[in-house]
Length: 308
Image (cartoon, rainbow, N blue to C red; front, top):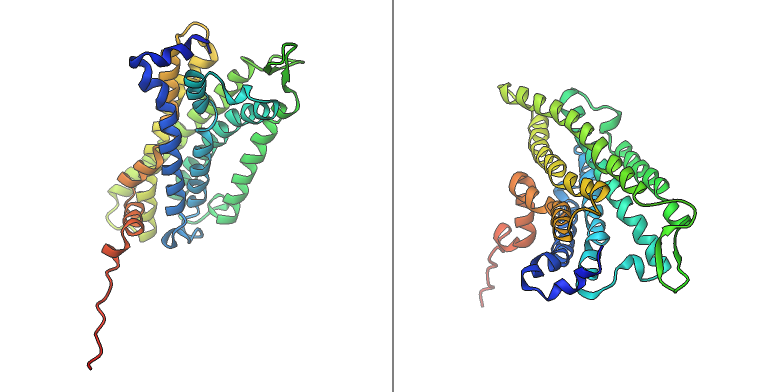
C-alpha cells in the first residue's frame, strides 16, 4: 500500500471506498452471526437428515473471520494511518496467518459443499461423505490442514526493524509475493476447477430431477437447498477471483482505487450468505420470520377470565 492513501480520506469522492470496508465488518458480522443462529434453530438441528448444515454453519463463522483481516486493514490504513499487521509482533503474526488461513478454509468448505451436493443428488443412498460425523471430520481436517500450511507465519514471519518498526516479512525467505501465488492457487484456482466440475454434475442431476414426475420428500429437500448453494458457489467464483489475481500479479502496477474496489467486491461476497439464503432458501426464510416476529407466527391464545 502507498502512504498516499491516508491523505485521500479527506477527498469526498473517496469516502465511500475508504469507509466501505468498515461497513462490511459491521454488516457482515451481524449477517453471518444471525445466519449461524438461524441454522442452529430447532428445524435445522437434525443434521443426520441434512448434514450439509455443518458446512453452512462453519462457513458463516469463517465469513466473519474473513472481514477482520485485510478488509479491516484497508479502512484502518486509509483513515487512521496504521494496520493491524504493523501494530505489534503478535498482531502481525496472527493477522498474517488469518488473512490466508480464513480465505483458504472458506474456499475449501465451499468445494466440499459442492461435492456433498453432487453426491447427495447422484447417489440413491447416503455414502461415507454424506454422514454427519464424517462431515465434521472433513471440516476438522480442512481446518487442521490449512493451519499447518500457514503455520510458518507464527514461526518465521514478522520481526522488528532497526528503527523499531514492525516488518511483516520473514528474515529467512521471501513470504511475499510467494504466498500470494500460493493463495491464488489454494483460494481460487483449485477451488474454481473443482467447484465447476461438481456444480456441472449438480446442475445435470437437478435437470433430471425436474424432469421426474414423482419426487420423494428427501429429493425435494435436496433440490431446494442445492439450488441455493449452487448460486452461492458461482458468486464465489465471480466475485473473489479478480482481486486475488490483481494482488498476486499486478499489485505494483495497479492504482489503489482499483485494488480497493476489487478487494471490496471480494469481501462483499462474504456477507452475502444471509440475503442469498433469505431469497432462495424457503425454509431458512420462514425460520427467520418466525425468529424475528414470533407473535405473528405463534399468536397468543386469549385466556378466559374467571367468572366472578
